[in-house]
Length: 94
Image 1 (spheres, rainbow, N blue to C red):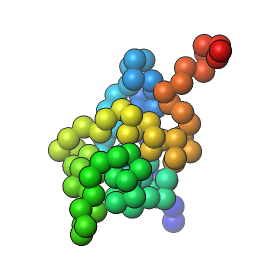
Image 2: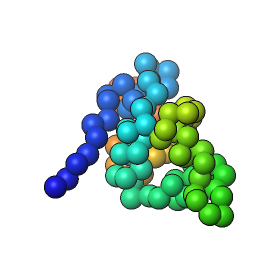
Image 3: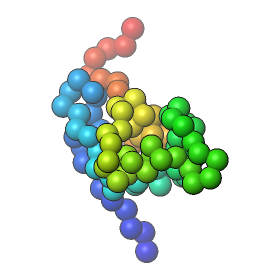
Image 4: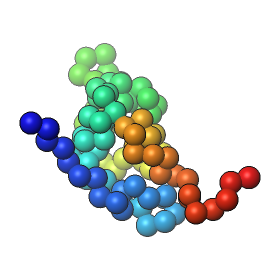
């Protein structure tokens, strides 16, 4: 069986266009879709990694003890195949 968590559309918006913080299960799902471990996630987005046990910061995002920064979320969404959420597709590109 394939169990997956739905990512709310509000979490897939630009930061200045009504973006809402993802919930822990949404963060976990995006990390899963990206095929990353907690340590790999931390390295990718530039947060600290412990020698043993991965990244406390990533665990705090998933447990909702702290907010995930928009930039880290946007990178994870891109790697997970959810698009470049920071780009406004309605505006012409230079």
